[in-house]
Amino acid sequence: MDPVIQDAARRDLAGEPYVFVTVTRIRPPTPAILGAHAIVDQNRQLTGYVGGECTRRILLDVAQNVLADGKPSLLLLSPDPDDEIIMAHDEASYLVKPMTCHSGGTIELFLEPHLPHDSPVAKNLLQLASQLSFRVQNAAFTPEDDWDALEERIRHLSQDGGFAVLATMGQYDDWAIEVIKQAPFSYLGVVASPRRGELLRERFLDGRDPHDPCMISIPAGFDLHSRRPEEIAVSILAEIIAVRRKSQPLPVRTLVAETSAFVIHPVCHMTVNLAETPYQAQFEEKTWGFCAASCREAFLQEPERYVQNKEA
Image 1 (cartoon, one colour):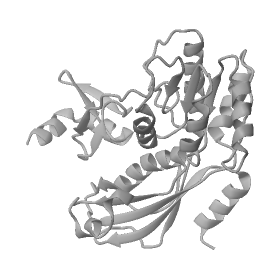
Image 2 (tube, helix red, strand yellow; image 1 turned 180 degrees about the horizontal axis):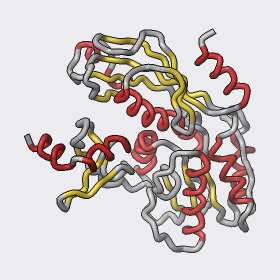
Image 3 (cartoon, rainbow, N blue to C red; image 1 turned 45 degrees about the horizontal axis):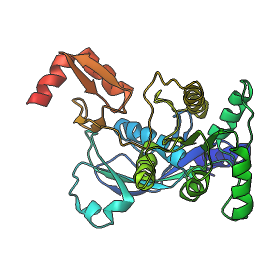
Image 4 (cartoon, rainbow, N blue to C red; image 1 turned 90 degrees about the horizontal axis):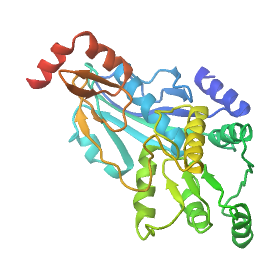
């Protein structure tokens, strides 16, 4: 049996979250093999082989968003955005990234999240909050539950103006927000990837009363560049503490749209958002953003070379 599939079966039994990756389409020249599999775990560790170093870096970043979103995704890497392989499909169903490897070629990857029944972020948050002076409850539910009973339960939990964190792993978040936002919570945080969070903000911003005392944070938590579930839980708990103490020393992602600064970084020429990427460097009184730590390190070794290439 394929060792990657064996590893996936082991992780399923152990309840470990991961993303199962399959090469679904290739266009030479590329080292990827059609039908090949790989696994990306929550620690950004890759098992298996689906392409070169440039493909690996992009895949690791996208896989983290898929884990947070809980929804499958198609990732298309191509040296030409107008390639006919893209135009032959519905572009809205793809996440398209430029192929920056020297080998060129086109690779299509299907990313399928495998998540345990309970959200790992929620489990870590419950454990951390219990160590402080919070009374915590895990209100697990599904759309099959009785709506009236669920709303009554939520009203009971929120009667003292408590704090709610929604961690549905992307399955029922729209439905759950509609139910939970009616309750008098002081805070509602929604665990979501930046991409999913943007969609939710657009939907739930319209018609919101600006005097509503409940703070809604999507994605939940301070922007600490967290990646692992326990790190995300820490960022959310820190935000809740700030709301509780009526002091917010760090910028918070709320329903108000953020200003983004998209730039093309000088190493592999990918578009990055300076407001979100943790990989930044200062050179010639300017902030440069990068898609990965390896690109940042390459830039810092020879910044003049990459700046000259970019200007050319």
